[in-house]
Length: 315
Image (cartoon, rainbow, N blue to C red; front, side, top):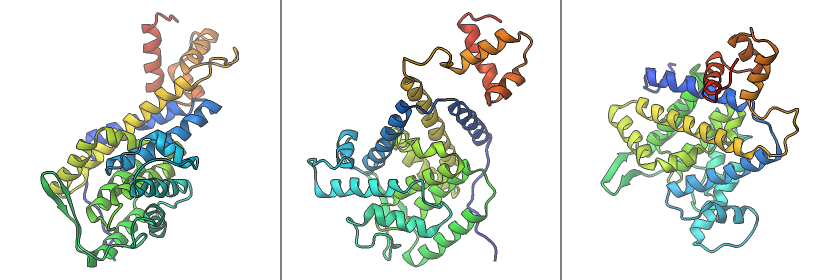
């Protein structure tokens, strides 16, 4: 039996974005895991939950979501409160889901929607269409096809050798195209992309890509529509890789702000200072050797040295 292959193309933009993301992940490896960053990661989880709900029209902000997490009473509609509680439960298991497991995806939907939908954790048995203020933008496949389409999608997910950055984006698009549930499809699609990304690198459990999607919501839906018109997910993959890159850059920016001011003098505050120290000890040291010692790419070191020169450092 042949395995379904989702249609998409590997463009030069996709290759460039994948390379950029890999370099940014290397940069993150050198950020200390201190108390401040642990706090930042907790805040980012709240940001993920808040953003994915706001995309779907929930009006709760991060403060209210945090209050619910802490067991406090907040003002809001019963639907909004249950949406938040469901998202909190679904994201609690982010580190435990097996991204290749269809059973786990159904579990995530049940946790997300159990107090909102009678069919929580079960594929839909009725027709659905996706609409906007301009009218219907996508008519999902009929319900009698959902089980087989999802089975094929997970077979591909279990067999593909494609880079997981690309896989996560292709899956996200294909999932939204199928729209397998009566409700909660957008939230689960975004969650499952994070689950796949977390399997690639653990840091993605704390990267709120949902927040960047929210900030670019119009383009998010446009990318879905353009891919639907073309019959392949390439434009959506490019869009999501841009989102991931922006999310990592924002995390690095936040992390640098989280470094405590009272760092011991013998602990370098940045990779740039480490580079200066290495060059001071050996003026003939090569870029490749510095990159090897610091665990990053040659390109990253070249970029850092350019910044150092701009700051009037000299070898």
